[in-house]
Length: 411
Image (cartoon, rainbow, N blue to C red; front, side):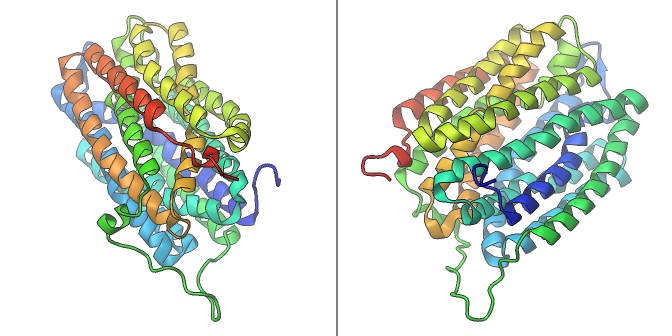
């Protein structure tokens, strides 16, 4: 347990991540297909313009709102304490599920998603704050890795369950059944969270917390140059990821020469997540010992190769190694998050996480919006543009990135 960096609050937080994340992933991966059905579907292999723009809007909104929610998530975590802040975030998520269930139209999917996609983004600073508090500094990559590994459990099983629902009841009824399950799982997750995560509210006699900073511009001045360089490279790499991201399911189930079914796509997503899970523990252990930069750089390389390889995959057996590669892009993600923690001020961990993701995802939302326009020009144009951004982002990090834990004189 010490090797894995687990304590009571960590265990409670990880249980919550599995349950709430499972509900989120059962339906979210299939939302582009749900929007396609609700907004007019496709003519042959060509989606209607409304479908393409609505799917692009969903992806762009995901990034933009994730950005806008990240900083308030960090601020509320500092202000309310992580336990109470997570409770608020869970209620927001459940409200989004209810909107999709009650209102049966494509624009209601966008409204509901505005609430439930907030959970991952708005809760990230709080979960990273728990890691920073309860895990020793020399185990941070392992602590973040355990969080990322556990997040893969719902990302692995959720699409399989969601694909099964669709196979049984069709896209419309299957996705709606998925969100009923999501509400039930979120409720159980809240119980686990409140039972196991320690309350970090101040008690009489406790030293006061540093005042929560609500001005992002003032907080930005506390961001180190090393963290800013990581942020720039991360923005470019997320352009590579997000330009094609919401169209990957459309590519696999509609565009290629031998399309796969939604059920098969769920299993391809599971292959991706299993690949990611197998990397986490050994990579985190090595990153804590030998430094984080090499692992982050390799990860950025995997991000870059994915859209290029996807473009040449035209059948199920060609897609399997591509989704293994997509799983490998998570190779150094825990190392990247641990590096952010290393480079953030000690008394501003949650807030600096929130600011980092605010800046990153505001820019990256442009990629998701632009991805739909590139798809209208041509699916291959979309994938090649993503590859180009990956090359630039990886090169920037290799040249400019720094690893504080390996700096001269570091412990």
